[in-house]
Amino acid sequence: MTDNEENRTAIIPDFFFEIIGRITSGLLVIALFRYWSGSDFEAVFSSVGLSVFVFAAAWIIGITLDMGIFSIGTLIRFEKLLPPFPSSEDYWKYVHNVGAWERGIIHKVTAQVIFFRNMMSICALTTLICIIMEYSSRLNSLLPLLFSHHRRYAILGIVFSFVFMSCWWAQRKTLTVDWQNWLEIEHARQKPDHLGKPRVE
Image (tube, rainbow, N blue to C red; front, side, top):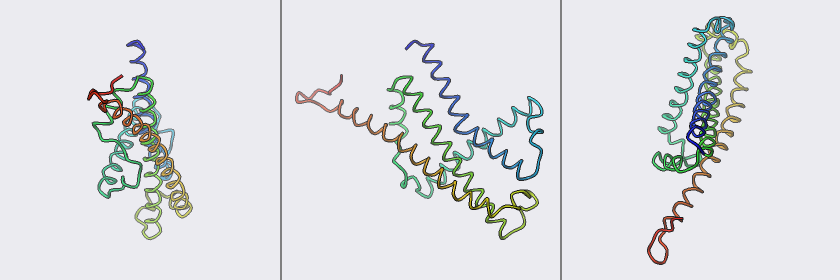
């Protein structure tokens, strides 16, 4: 593969990673807030400058969700319930040693893992807001359309939280299984033979 082809395959995964993994979930949060608050959708994209601001805000929301979940999950040891993920050193070694095309696939699957994780969080937070609305009226004026159907949205939030959590678990398992297979091959190649030399092809 030429340098130009490698550059193109590197740009596409990075773009895919941000759009699918973070910006999409951030845009969903903005859209839901605008809808549940009874605001005008057309005003959000009324100008190019405002549209750029919305996409930047969506990215910030998406990465905040992503890092927030990671921090909370690490704090409560939630990662132990999921397929084991490689350490940073092993992961970057794995990514560095695969080809450009395989690296693009890895980035896409990683983006999907982040997307499903963010979607699960959005559904869980929606459910939490609906539960708060059941016992408190502080959020009713801020999100009147959500309050009018908060019990229905709470049920939907619970259902979709489990759906997205299942998708997150499955995609994460796909990523970690491929990494573990590669790691086993690497260990087998580096294992000394009967002459004491590494088995490097």
